[in-house]
Length: 318
Image 1: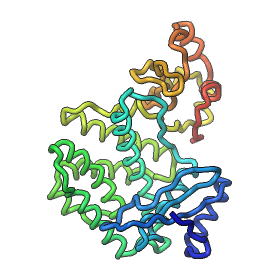
Image 2: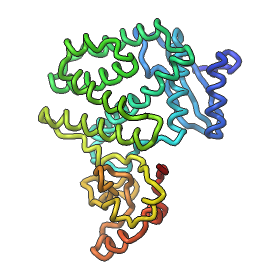
Image 3: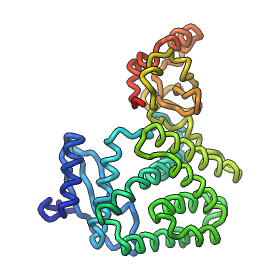
């Protein structure tokens, strides 16, 4: 892995890096770790926060400007006040945890792509050639050289087509609708949620995200599999108004003793669910031994703002 001198990057990339550094107050460092890629995909650059820096690693040399800018736009969105998903519980089974988180992250990134594709079209990094190469990668992903049962292939293809419709800007809709009718119908329903909401507005982004997570969970259950339980396993940043912050907690949220284990306390997890959408917004470090009716009564009488502050719940003002 080799660090790339910022002098060797295009002006649009340098400007985006400077924008992020000003936004987060940390330096962005770019590294190359090139390998041979038969197809262009949207995961050929990645990033992590490390030692007070944001490290970005590119693996595709031929399309390095595109994949680097793509990753930089993801970083910008993550730090621009959009709702995020997080997880503070475990099922006790690492594979199950991983499956829930990976599918949720895939759906989340596809929602972000609705804005990123616009940005990359505007900056000129998403060219006709790039679109063609990206769609070749999608076609390959839809026809993998692996054996999966029909239901699992349907789950997998729904994720791929969802992203393909958004970032491919509907270029292959007719083909995918004919070739993969069930997965296409599911994915098209997700896209409808994205396109009827403004993804730059936190409340609408969150609403679309919850609809999409619920839709994917329903797909899995309808095929006879155990659901992902996103509503209780994941926390999604709440978006509330100043008026709602002044309400008592029980008017907007309810505490649920969940079937999962709190990663922090290693005890039973208690989650805070929105009354309106049933989505968890936080995992509460409540001692199960103290969860008495009297405890709940006192806890619920707090204002939403006080309860959030007490439990360190991050929120966005609507």
